[in-house]
Image: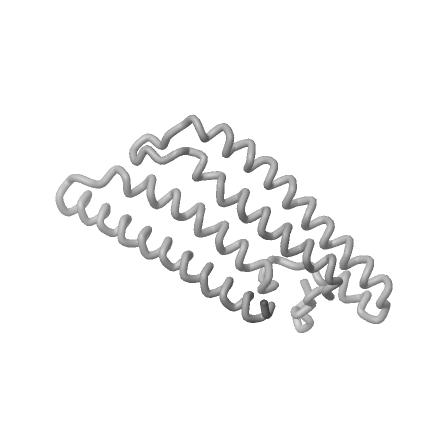
Length: 166
């Protein structure tokens, strides 16, 4: 499969899912506010649903931001190595390994929370409590796989922040 084509489809899918989460959250909160202030009643499930969708939206966004190079990057030190290709290659590999290590730690913690939440249900909607940490696990796995692919392919770091000092 063509990598830029797959990247474009991945971006469109994640943006669609984030927009759907945001749309449902906005409608649920709006209806709840109107009912509370206009009629003195509300929908208890609105807060729980909004919290769940917000967590999923954040981790979908984090996953989509990685291949787009939109995560925070401290490129000023690495940028000084541009004229030293061997040092730059070593630093790139180290950075990718550290990203993978961070993802493994996040995934391990999220997996433990998923296991704990399998026996619990949310109070109002009754969905499995494991749905709250699940997006962290999926995000960490996805970013680790992307970083591993970049490491194996020896992709150069995207230092697209050349005009900025970070």
